[in-house]
Amino acid sequence: MADSEVLHAAHRLEYPYSRSTGPIIGAFLTALRDGRFLGATGSDGRVIVPPTEYDPITSDDVGDLVEVGPGGIIESWAWVSEPLRKHPHQTPFAWALVRLDGADTALLHTVIAPTPDAVATGARVTARFRPESERIGSMADLEGFVPEGGAA
Amino acid sequence: MSDETTELAPVTTLATPIRLDFDFTPGIAQSKFLRGLEHGTFMGQRCATCGKVYVPSRGSCPTDGVPTTEDVLLGNSGTVTTYCVVNVPFAGQSIEIPYICAQILLDGANLSFMGLIQEIPTDQIRMGMRVEAVWVDEADLTPSLASVRYFRPNGEDDADYETYKEYL
Image (tube, one colour):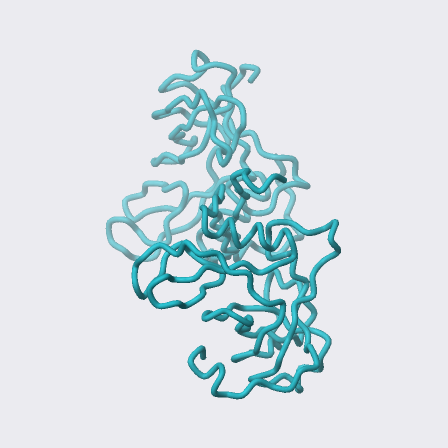
């Protein structure tokens, strides 16, 4: 390398944190690994997904965990036409708030669709999980949602 | 979708790495140091006001606030000013423990820098020990500190404490 050439190099700063999940988020992630969704029952009977550890109104422990989904409706969405390197998909996708069947709150995840024309507020979607052997107990175990009945 | 009961333990922890990726450009002064390494030498810079020699130079004197413009070729040997014997394994460790991490004041420099000491039992390291740099093969030299494999005792008598007490 000629001495006049400007030097530059890739530099990575990384902290390999791990967090304890606690009993509620832990149960939610364990269920995701099994390809299922769990929500928490609030004091007003609402089902909160993803579950919180404490009731948002009374701050008491939440009630029973109940299964919800795997289908749901899009409450809101934003199309990403040029995904960034750290995005969950490297082809265009939508960030979306999805209210799963049986839930009263929406979950932020992605909708995998070929074009934004296939995504709409109020449209029905269903979960697409990663293959069982790849699931580790993480939000990424859910690959994303796909339009119900439609090929994505 | 599976309703089978999992045989895996429940999820209790979640890996949440934080990562920042930079494209690092060292600038003029550090580039001179790095180019020196590429040639198997240590290059420093002298402050024209106080006369101190910094290695690696950041391009200015932190005491006088003036640019350091005079390049100084430093020696291949130096003095251990202080050290630490590392016995604790940690993530990403690339050297077999125990090993010695030392502050080394290169001959001709007024600033020490950190280096690995090898070819000596860890219980024989001491302040004032004279050491020399061991470089990678010439074909493997790069503008990086990876060009310096480690430092080892150079056989000289220990340096007098007075010669390095200002650099602890």
